Length: 310
Image (tube, rainbow, N blue to C red; front, side, top):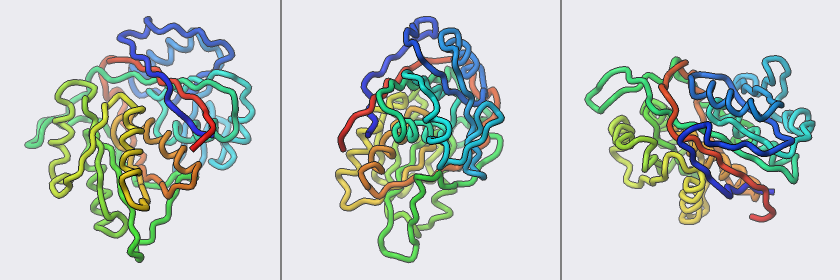
């Protein structure tokens, strides 16, 4: 089975969203700001069944409702497969990258004849920390994380061989995240960098902040791709074009940009791995600051379907 984004709906206010699906469950994560709280509260009014899911990267396990723990390789069989719902609402506003990846991976692996809706609320504003010579600095991360693998999307790249990978990083506001990848690699594993920038951004001019923040990291990179910051479907198409235009590529994705970009990357990862493509990811698990955003921008529902094919 594969996953496909079939519809995208955008709303200016939560109360414009009508939730009509019955036999539904809400999967959500840790609240960090008022966006998370408001999305959870609104959808909870219509969806009675819900589960909070947190991923522990050091132990490769998922924690359900702060108590039940499942190892990565057992999460699908022992948790997802026990759910009998037809409609799955995944709150990407509160869930982290790893949780969304493993939820979608296992829904695709063990469930059939279901409907999936991914919810995401844009921030209206990010809290600024200070101005720098390269533009505004945003106070987003409490502790920088270490880049780690997420089974089953680990990909071993032997730095001693001539065969290297193409790294595709997504650009956000925190240039140190890409900088740490480049400093630790120094040409050992990646022969090419093809960054993807969110354009149009959530707000006008935010793409300029991202470019300014990554000035040092991008100075020797000539191939930059663009995808709307809020559109995972377009992100998927950009990734597919990179894949189709590369000769026998080994791809590594670094989803360190917007959450919709990460959703597009996740669906691309799942579909390509399903058909045997050499693809993996690297992710740094930053410890995000609480209340790092103010207000809610547009709210999106991304409708996902299963289909047979490659």
